[in-house]
Image 1: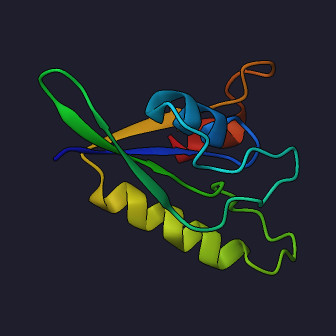
Image 2 (image 1 turned 90 degrees about the vertical axis):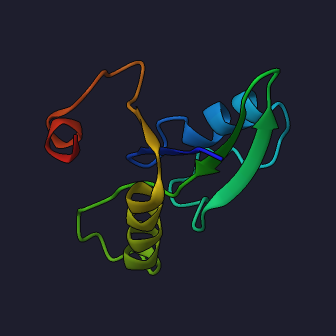
Length: 104
């Protein structure tokens, strides 16, 4: 079954996209950066194809003293390494930033 990882910086709408795609509120949506810390998986069955989606915490490469930032980043990188397809999300209002382009 193909795995699709939804990744991007903190607070760009990854959990909202995940919930929309899987058709249920499985991931917590919050304005507070760092709310999603672990990977969250859900399977969506279509007529001819079943997919597994993975919501991830934000890719934050800045050293900002957040307690769980290393673990969140490691978990997101693990999702990227195991995914068959990656949805890379950026902030729709601001567009892709220089740090988005560096990650991409």
